[in-house]
Length: 132
Image 1 (cartoon, rainbow, N blue to C red):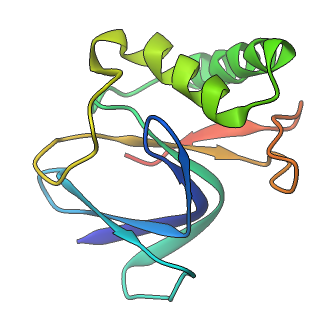
Image 2 (image 1 turned 135 degrees about the vertical axis):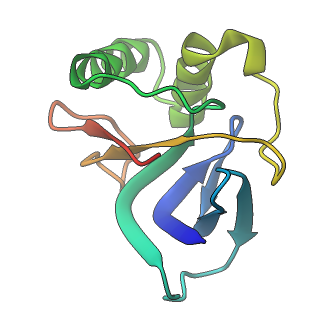
């Protein structure tokens, strides 16, 4: 089982600090909520926000680059990062907007990296990584 951690996890509605996402061989997930991150075996820590895709679809580099442009446009309308990410997930998978993350669900994750974490702002240097 692989483990992924970041400063924040976006659960589809709100940002959660210090969550650890565990993924089994069938891409089912389990989430641990902690007050702080404790290093564990098979865990990778990332500087950014983990965002569920609610699917295992693979995105091209160009699509990931365009996603950042979408986030920057959404940020022009509001400074609320949770609202921006909610709208982004609705764009990715509108039929899955209100799904809760749970262990039985097969999902992939994107990592939003190189953003201003102190002010929770997307910058021109922000980019996406496709974790799985």
